[in-house]
Amino acid sequence: MSATTARPRMKSPISAAAPARTAPSTRVSGRTFNIVALIVLIVFAIVWLIPSLFALKTSLTDNGTAALGASAILGDWNPTLASYASYFQAGDIWNWYIASAITSVFTAVLTVFFASMAAFALSRLRFRFSNVVLLLIVLGIMIPSQVLIVPIFQELNAMNLLNTYWSVIFPQVPAVIAVFIFKQFFDGIPRELEEAARIDGAGLWKIYWSVVLPLSRPVLAAVTILTFVGVWNNLLLPLFVLSNPNLMTIPVGLATVQGSFGQRYADIQAGAILAALPLIILYLIFQRQIVEGVTGSGLKG
Image (cartoon, rainbow, N blue to C red; front, side):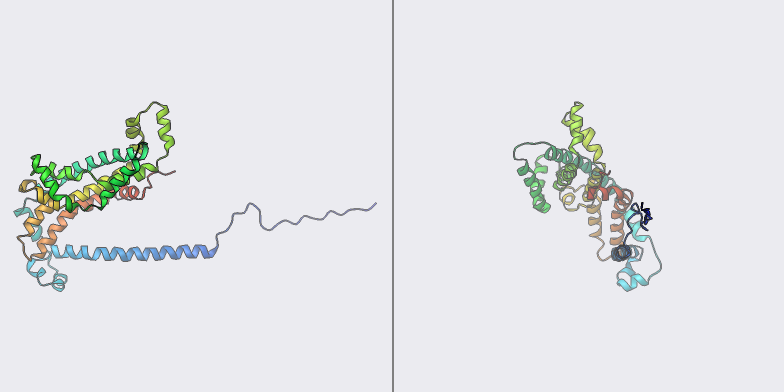
């Protein structure tokens, strides 16, 4: 009878449940990419800030010094608010602010309402020639707005809407790019949510208002703000349809005032900063919604 000797089991030095380690080269490459990206962003930020800071410095400089050139502007360290005071004393800037706010808010609200409904129909409804309709809408992006100024003026004149806020609001409500952005966002919303709402007895309007729009808050905010900014900065349309000084928007009012300034660079830069200041504040408040809406990252999880 032979005795059998049990061989001892050799334990593996590495457990099967041990997590995989990240290669050092991967971590180094990721850190390098972050550093390079940070440097590039800093460079772009500096390139963007230098003209803005120079404009601010010019607006705080005397007109006589500003006329001497950039070296005189940078070498002057006696800031003055005379250029800003001239707008509040001689111009109707508060009326221009109110007119710009009214036209921008109403246009943004109407644009979001009608563009979202059109995009919902193109995204969720099935009808003949839907692709043709979408193609025709997208082709509208290729038409320059300057080409439509004369027909728009004639239509507004026929309806007796010239020199009213509606003459600035109505022509800017049909925004092709807003329809396109909304449709792209609506296409990413799961259809299971719509089907569940239909099972509960919801109709198209209920699905649009209670299901789709609440999920589209980021893109709603983005389109609203982008439309607001576009209308606020629009010079050509208000210049053609408004002649009443009390109804002029900020760009038109500043253009009329700056036309009498001549080479008064400080006053011109002060006017530009006054026009851009509300938009800067608006963007700083809603920058997160703008980024989420444009990138389409509103649906998470």
